[in-house]
Length: 195
Image 1: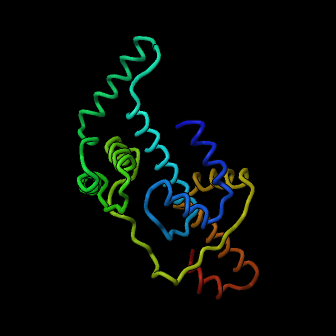
Image 2: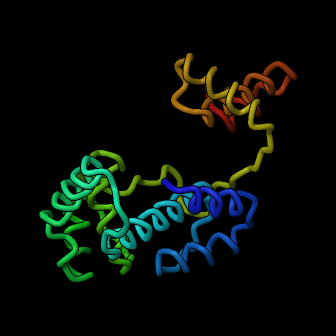
Image 3: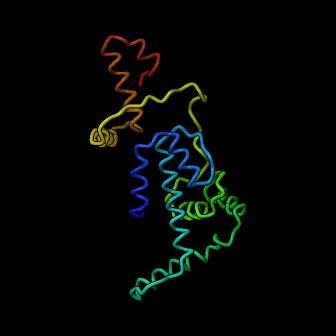
């Protein structure tokens, strides 16, 4: 959205989980134990964008602008104001969030709630209940794999052109096939099925 947010996100890209969780709490006003760095970065970006949007709404128009730009801005502001979200309390916004986004939230950040509801209305965020985990908590382990960005981009292009659902499915199949090739067929079948 803005260079300022991009700069913050660039600095956070190499941050460790405790630092990301602290920033998450600072931005969104709620704590988290989420172990997923990508998720934390996405939610922090969303929160920063919501705060930026809230700050823009709070400022009164200043300086001179071309009439066309002013007209466009006024139309967008009128549309935002006509949805009535800014007049709702946090509790009312949380109820509206549940209706529009389709799942509960623990956030009490008014700007974030308004932003998320508007994004859901325009189809820019996923709506519906939270995805159910396929495994019982504590039965799986994330294995970090560091690859150059160019390699990941190339791998993603291959995944897009194949029948694999995602990068993870592709990598599991690759491990399965390598184990079989190296003579560990029973191990491959036991831990990766027929992949």
